[in-house]
Image 1 (cartoon, rainbow over the protein chains, first blue to last red):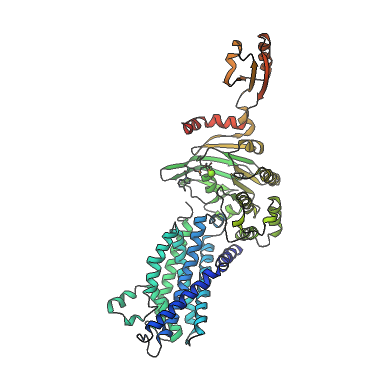
Image 2 (image 1 turned 90 degrees about the vertical axis):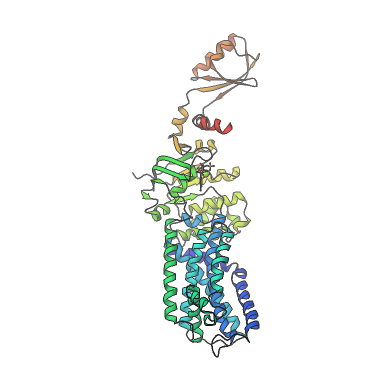
Length: 251
Length: 305
Ligand SMILES: Nc1ncnc2c1ncn2[C@@H]1O[C@H](COP(=O)(O)OP(=O)(O)OP(=O)(O)O)[C@@H](O)[C@H]1O
Ligand SMILES: [Mg+2]
């Protein structure tokens, strides 16, 4: 247990020591999105009846911050350790591949939740956001950040250089988040795009998370929960296989 | 007795490059062992396989009887490796680095031992300095310290003295010798053969992924028979009677190969008889370097060509 705990703690310190970049900067980014989109779209879009667009937007932005930062944490930590070579200290140790997995995922969850909470708390200072079910909110935040933390491990192991990681982020993570319904309800989309959205796991994370706030969603939260859980298990299995076989880590 | 390190039929290929071509090696507990060989011979590859950083193409390796793949946790707990590359985590200070490394091995209250390592490696004034701010030699000391946090019974040092000043080199070897006396098995690689000769009891020489010599330092040196006699003469001509002994002649120095010490007297008698005066005389004892050069000979000449 001590080995796992040490790695987890080290991963926490790693982002906490540079909290200005890893926590404050993403909170600021999310607030800028809120400012711009709500200003431009407030009078044009109404996603759910009786819910102002800005209020609708807030949970989506919070979740987007959670997901992106969870991914950024494990992926950037791994690629940095690989490029600088200090990954050997973990690889030389008797830490099991499961402990390594758990430590990186939990640190990602922690970073995702801290940033998400930051965005949420700041917006509370300006807007009145309902909170129907804290349990659903927490559940989706935990599952979503864990899923992205595991994906971050895959990306960090697979990428050999920083630009490959950036490509993973820009061509996979970013489009999937933007097209997941952070900024709109998918019911406002044409039928083709609407059905395409159903193949995007990020859509279920955002939708389920938002359900916790409004008690309304595009799809049943139970169904979203099942989808996200399945994705998490599949991605975790793949990550564990990579760590177990030493893919791109032990040559 | 379980060997400290046991390597059987180890093969490793990187694409088309064969880094190890069937290495068999046993190192006993308590030995001070050197792994020697020119650049690219496969020393680091072998060490990395022991450490689990590289997966073998075929063959097996054990540390204190534990297979490095199937019971990797036990094997790694018993092994401390100082990597050849200077790596560090720029987020932490020296002391934090050592505490984290202890934690990876499941050690919680390791401060007394960490303090001792810090003291022996002369890192006390740098203990709270960020790794980024250390000089190269200092970083190397921290690497050594990190390998020792869990008091491993088997310690492997991959060129620990590259880029390290004389003072630390001596302090480091004093500390490592102390650990060896306390029962730790030491395996090192170095390109300074005098270091290996002074410290190690046994040596393996690797050449292109194969072991080409494996013996005690004493036996290896004894394998080179005789001694060499280096002379400067006046007048500067070697008597014809001594020409059969001449092994090289360079800028007025004649090097004669003699079988044993008693032959020296004969040489001097000839010189006296020919009225040749000896200006300088030096007896050259064979050393590990000579053995190394002889064994690696073909490789060296190819590299120079
Ligand atoms: N990751 C790798 N990919 C491809 N080839 C490699 C890799 N690592 C080592 N090699 C090759 O394997 C051979 C053995 O390398 P190794 O690092 O074990 O040599 P060494 O004996 O440690 O040399 P040195 O004294 O320079 O440290 C070399 O030909 C090297 O180029
Ligand atoms: Mg090497």
